[in-house]
Image (cartoon, rainbow, N blue to C red; front, top):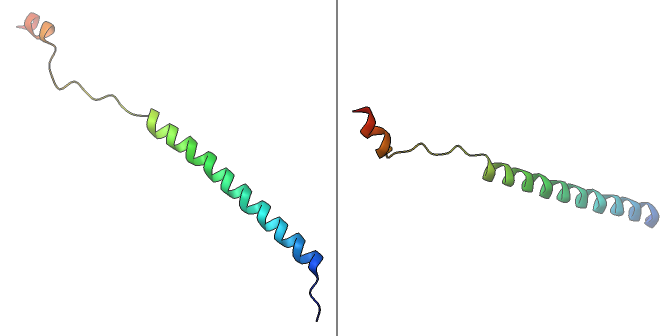
Length: 58
């Protein structure tokens, strides 16, 4: 039984291209998710009352 090096080379090349494609896509998605999580936050509510407004309410 003889090894068909041409088919083996083609399969190896396709696998390498597929792995590179998946890694690049993952990096893009990771970057998008990181930017989304860093920029999508709710502002904290004020814990301290506004001194000017509380003086007028009394």
